Image (cartoon, rainbow, N blue to C red; front, side, top):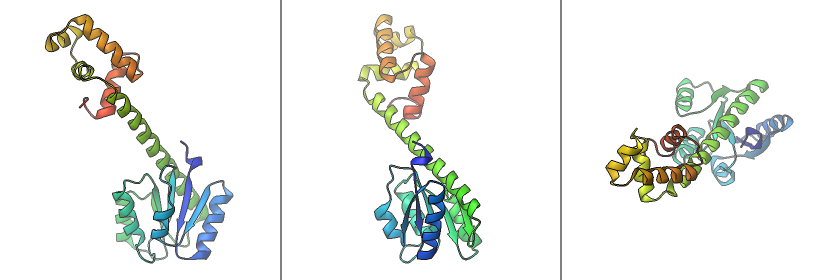
Length: 207
């Protein structure tokens, strides 16, 4: 999934600014969705697509920083570019520490905003790709039998087929058959790829 498939959500209570930013992002080919409040954004956002929020700090109801915390709690893949009409260093620092791409003071340079939106969409797209990859890995790991998991755990621990056979009280041939089945299910062609797959799929070893 690429950032080109994403959506820029403009969240600001100033309709003129919403329209201006919407026109700007539309002029370079991004899809735009305008929202006048955090509550409206939470109703509208599609978190299956790369998303960038151009988010005002001061909003009616939930503030921009409160919305950021809500999206963090939801583990949203969306990325945020804050905009504010008031220079506020502590708020900017807090926003960046919580993962915002940038904190721009109004009036901002159009190209700078577009650059940050591009960065945000790219980061959101990469996060969605990472999650899809992890979900695929988890599905394949979940397809292993209990015995295959036992074999895999020992293989990624550096055990030879003979050592695995001894530990599990089975023949070397049976170990090799299990390893072949595991590699087929994992879609890998070598033990090195198998170890990398298992490590990525479950952190250290199959649970």
